[in-house]
Length: 201
Image (cartoon, rainbow, N blue to C red; front, side, top):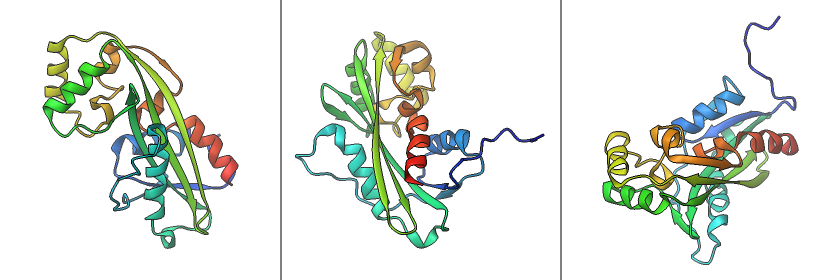
């Protein structure tokens, strides 16, 4: 009988997460305990002005992938790079730069629905790349101005697209529903990643 409760990947690939995100590390660990980490590639995260906003995460994940050092990989390893954006009224809400921008973002989201899009790129030692995106629709309840300010002051969500973490207080009391992958909102669409790793093998 197996003493650990990890599920082996059935196609022999081993993901290497090229990211500094603690949430993506936690999420991938749910699917592949003991996976390997690599430092996030050093890239300037810019994109063409004419690029449709929902295509931005895929573009940026591929940009990050192109900067990874393939010599780090073993033959059965695959780099995983990702980028997540929040879209509201077709406007990209990235990571807020300060308290006022975080409050402004949450007031825009309050009482409305928005989309979270994550782009993921898989890259193997031979330089093959495969990019996909996953979209989740999130429905926010109306949140008071006071609660928004208190949340920002306590949780300081400056490292999160859209200025919120669904796994935090605001997700527990401020979100009415989610259509699509819950984990995608945290930064990594696990079910889609599992399927795409199988296709990439």
